Image 1 (cartoon, rainbow, N blue to C red):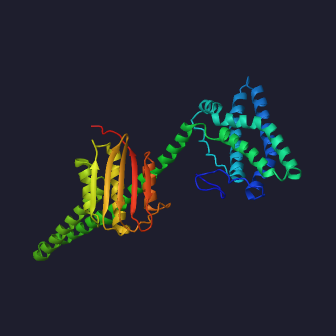
Image 2: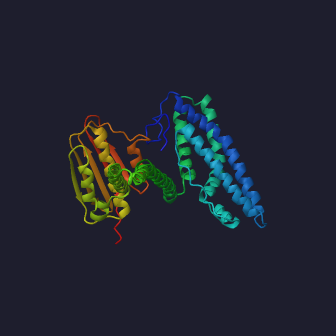
Image 3: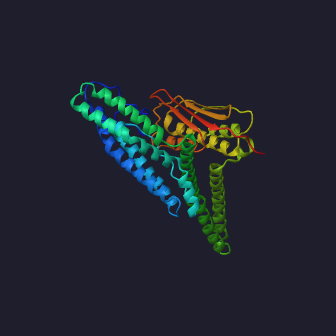
Length: 388
């Protein structure tokens, strides 16, 4: 959530009002003075749109004009949200766009039943009396009531904040949920594309290059087989070693995609295998009544695996622990270490990437890492039963 410059993070409430005319008060006064011209614009637009499109509703162009007018009212609502954010520090999420459907009639029907557009029309229709009142009171207050004007301005703008939140916010929880899912879908697509690029790079730089060298070595050995059998035998022996290395690289790559131990034996054995490769002793505790769905199990595995890699590379820890358990309809993971702490979930970091991946499947990712006191990472995933 975006916060204003004068409010604490996560809270868009203005600071307590004071008799002095500070920057917040002047912004509120400016907002109230702008109410009248903005209300006039909105009211004229609504009256014109409803009058013209309603009068022509019996013709072929009436309903399309009304649909276009509702799209325009959305833009007026957007302008009011921007004004409230800049001058009142009130952040209102943007409604989701109207779904695009092929064909004229589907577009027409979707636009005409758009709740965001109709609430913007209602906002424009009721704002004119309020705009006249707030403009008049504020203008008079600047000359007559200035000792109490900060309190009056706060009371009036609180009513404005309520109108903006009530009429210009997303329709309901379902619409906000749709916006979240659209964002999560983008994260999933980007993650899948990044994984494919990583697999392609590993194949190209690792196993593929080694197999090319192997083919060249076997070709040279074939040429020397008759004229210098001893040299050919040495080259075949070297090629045999290259085959072993290529097979090991392919096994490592396959394990990075989806380890066989996870498929065959579940999270307990797979996480124990990951913990054994960590540079510090790791205690693993998995308490699950059954195995979750394959997708959830894979996300849990790779989350713990990446966190333990961070422990090995950055934590400077002596010990670490992994706990996995089920609580209700959630799968919980906790990875702890007694290292230096100070892990940050900044944008672009590995932890931020993990948080995005978990968020894409309705997961939760929390990092607690005070300086010098170790790190505790807790993750939640939705529990889905495994389909056999």
